[in-house]
Length: 144
Image (cartoon, rainbow, N blue to C red; front, side, top):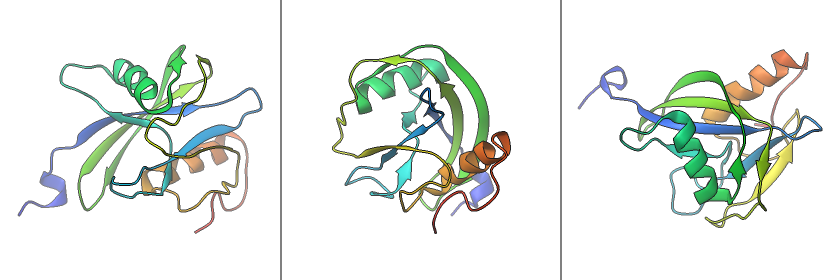
């Protein structure tokens, strides 16, 4: 058995969609996936030879039915879960087209701080802290 540090990380592109009011989009993890029902930012795994931006564009069409505009790389976070070590590539997105369509029967919610949806996926929590720092928000960013 390998230790967490020895596991090769899985690269994941994550879209942090921000609307004109400054709210951000969270989606629930679908039934049948690890952490089903937890709230997260949408995205998915990079395929072989795929860039973060290309993966994010593909995943957001596949998962929620939208085409995104400019992708702004933001931060990278390494998360250790029981099932995998994941390198999350967070990208801010302010423009998109198309109608939101939850193609994996997940739910969606526009949120601001503190997030009302729960439970929140552990990999989402650092992003909420980054938003709090950017927005001078003081207090709990989500319910436990």
